[in-house]
Length: 492
Length: 137
Image (tube, rainbow over all chains, first blue to last red; front, side):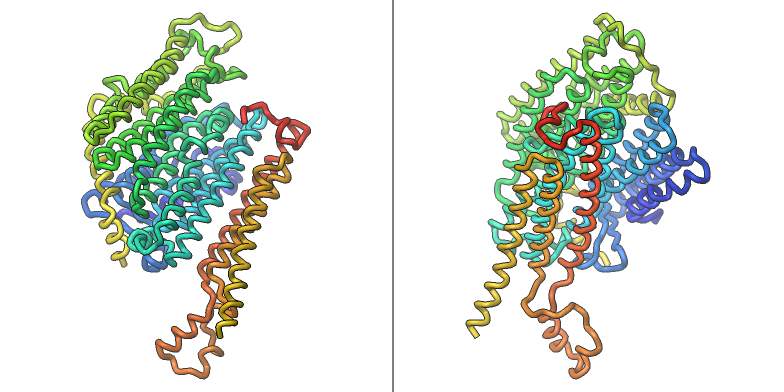
């Protein structure tokens, strides 16, 4: 045993609150410590994950209370994969924002505290086995998300943040209503216990609880009617935070929806519902993306669209579909941060952040532009990059389940995606530079973090086998509801 | 006997209905009002309503605090049945613990919301939501 899952929550939370104190000792510690913490957790997560793959799920009971009563953390092949992914991204984002905009001591202190809290909340959502505990982590994550959105005082960030806060707190009330409904019906808050007793609930209450849950989590997962906050928050928040939202926060939201629909309640037609919501989200978001003239808003709509695609893949419901959905998630978690990170250097000095201002930057920022183009090619699903394999496995899963309409729509939407991404890439390389744009060279640490993501995308593209076996393990672990219940309830 | 049962259900029914009414008032405030401050107040009312609903679930008419005090156990032998009987008369502590947590979270959200309202007011010199439209709503 190298360490226990509780460290994933305890260490970053402790570090977040120690940062102001450490700042008194040496100001540079404020920037260094988060990186050390995230690197330690990443190493821990990788070693725990390899242990879990061999010896089975680790269930950590907090305070020694056995699962139906106490809170427990579940580190299964599925949750472990997501935890590792999130920590990896958090580390990349730390490395990128180490010297981002050369901010002063005071703002960078707040920035790293909030970033660590955001990571704590997201990982907590994934690891916890208790729905009320999950609600608490969601609030930790979203409150730090609101604050990070409003980080820059000069822009319209307070407006974006207030919008996010309004939607977020309304939807978290729905989440609380769902928890109330479940507790009043079953008298338990433990997910495995709920899953084993869910058939005792009256069907209409089950449907109502599921709907409340999806409304409550859909806001973080950017499902269609609840994603109004996303474009504003992504465009107003600092660039690396846009990457954190698309890579970490959204994944936690999707996880929660998937856990509820796959494990907690077997509601007739919930899979079809996921497919329907995913399709609507996908089509609406991609149609909106093509109209955008600001780069970050475009990326945000594309991110929403990708989440729609993930939901559709989960909604196929077969193990193949779940595998494809996880592949899409990992893929999106690598590519979209790359796009945000490189994109925010491309528009570094501009006030408008519009696509027009990207013209001709290919000559001035060759490597950043190349990485942006690489991300663009990968996300639309062109071979031989990683996006291709994800989309391919999703389409073949849909084909095996005879969902012809889904395949048609996804392919059509992919064309839309190609159009708006290549419009940008075309501008970067083949247009004349705007005169008032001053390109800014990325710092070394930012460059390294972007290159790591770029290399991973290419590597997975050429050798998809690098991750497919892990994804298969994870999807089996998600589909096997009985084993989850047994693992949690028999631990003790 | 039937009369008392009827009374209990009226009381509990009253709690549920009033909690849901408070939730609806809060939703109205948060979604319809145009002033940022009123929206934040609406959110707080909504939270209170949800908390009230949560408390109501664990509530028993005439229930005692969920503590096995020496006084309670003084006159009776410690058999499983006695403890179970005592337990039946106690209110459920779990929703109360949940409400405590939810209140703290609500406090945090309200604080963040109000600080954002202050910043919006400094930036736009107004609190009317229709006039703060630099981003698309």
